[in-house]
Image 1: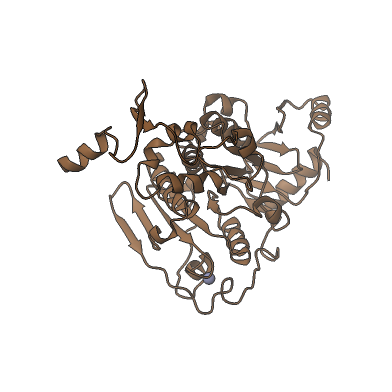
Image 2 (image 1 turned 135 degrees about the vertical axis):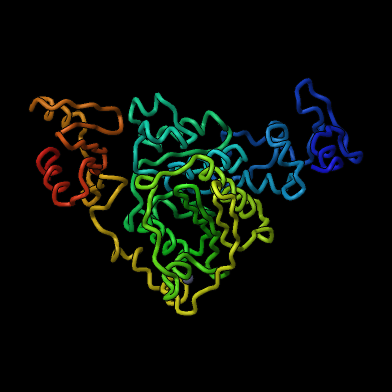
Length: 396
Ligand SMILES: [Zn+2]
């Protein structure tokens, strides 16, 4: 690093135009009083996005290092505090992005995930620990707890559910940005349909093996996911997943960092700084690429406004959900997990349960049932087997 730049980064000397108060801690120089300071408390901020979240002295200290960054400044920080974002899918990329945005002070964050924490997640999913895996906590629940511990001054909400055409408006309506942390194209195309129809920006991100990519989509201004992947010359979609060929922790964190930086530009009112290209990277080979993506003049979604995923024409009721497992999500209903646990235990089946889900084994299969009626079956990818076991043990 050039000496001058290094000196600037390390220097704690305040600009000469402001009056500063010294503190005992490492934040050696902070404005003694901010002109934007007012009495709005943090509880009021958490109550909703409409309230102005002007920066107070606590925020000035907390966010001082990114406020010093000239691209953001106090105004950008204020915009972040007033903004909202929804992270769909809280696996490796979603967890890392949610963590970065919570730390950065995005005022209202919603994290949505359908799955629960398992030991195989811990190698790369930075929000979860061994206790979460031991308790099989839903990722949305574990994420909400961790994010609140990281930043108690913003509004954070975890939603343990699947995003479907029926509930997507309820889950994502009103958020200023949608972040892709999903692991499948059905959900991504559903997000794309919703975002294009709602004119809401969203950021596609994916990683597998040692490579990953991200692309920021602004409806009406950039190509959308359907432009990118449904064009006649788009080539086949990559069907490999983390469950089939693995994934390295560093690449998901790299992709999440690129995604979170784009998010910060949008949410802080700096859309002019978006790089407007698809970025792909491989942490093993060191190959990095940035590609301009052109809009498809015949695009199904952003030109013809045919929202086949949003209209439910493309959503199967049973979907592959990782290696050797399927998810049943056709039976949206409220299940009494305690009663189900007692029924199964009476039949001699070993059951584990927490407040959010119930897990039991019917060798060679393992089934996890959620309170909303969803279930994930491990040990098979056959929808007929999933349907049959669900009917037998949970009831139809
Ligand atoms: Zn398009």
